Image 1: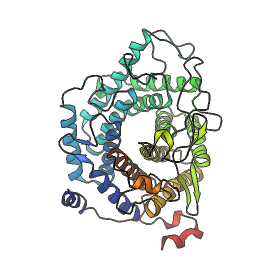
Image 2 (image 1 turned 180 degrees about the horizontal axis):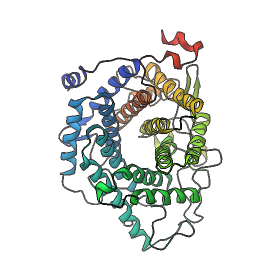
Image 3 (image 1 turned 90 degrees about the vertical axis):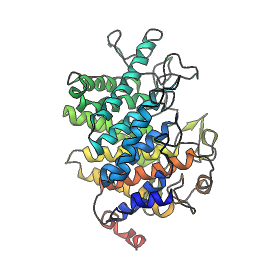
Image 4 (image 1 turned 45 degrees about the vertical axis):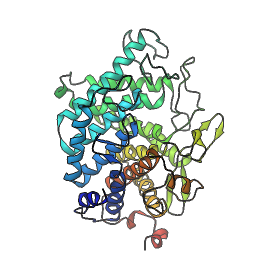
Length: 424
């Protein structure tokens, strides 16, 4: 396998520090690829889709044809595998959010390969989510925005109606995903035999529902869950970083499609809140951390304890945030130069820290990008297959994001002069 990785990556011309970081993270992530299943990690694991997304973006930006060929073959392997009962299409997991990560993986692969079959597959995933919600409307019509016509979808549940796992309400991640999925499919509407505004109208309705539900707290962060009795977010649930990220791409794409620049404002509030509440203040600048939120009324910022620990799979959330932050930055209005520079600095300082302080001694990346927390070594020595994959995939997302927002050869001129000695 190591020889294969060297062959796949040796032809890449490392023209900048960010390119070197990105190549290293891609090599680490690729080590989790299983050609027999076409997946990173295990079947039924939504994080496999996120690793696919990160690697597809890597191919898009670097032009690595050899890895791209692996991903093309993975599409055939995954979509031709027998269906698994009680799971999502193509077995990304069991819930509506799981399958939408798969949609993003194929849509990112489209960017690298321009084969319409990827968009078509992503659209079938969205239809599966919408069909699930139609089933819900036959039994439970709570938490619909006022004035929405009967039989019209207004927010989606996190799973299908017959789900046996319990705890299936309407939450932030599934609904911001639905918002983003619709917007990312919007350019393909006519190629998918839909009215040209089909997906756009779904997205507009969904944004209205998100505003009604009030997932974004006054401080700017998006909480995770909705009280299905009051149909409002009480502002006390966990503020995972991916909750802050997925909505950003959707808002930027909707703003671009409708030429309504005011939609960026919700994104600015989100990013500013993340930089205020969810970032370590290091000498090199702000570094994203995960999570900042509540679990049973207690604040946690330690992956050894949060949600049962150690680390679980939340490491991938930070990569999802950075992936979407980069997309948002690229689409920001030209007149927002100062704000764009500040957000870009956040990406770069997080990337710099992850490379210089977030690498594990034996290779790969820690859960903690800053290298300052007690859980650094815990996450570096987990035997669990999924956790290390998530940590490396998140790092690849981060370096992909850095390359997108700052594609220059040098990064020194972006960092404040007083920190330049750190780069020598």
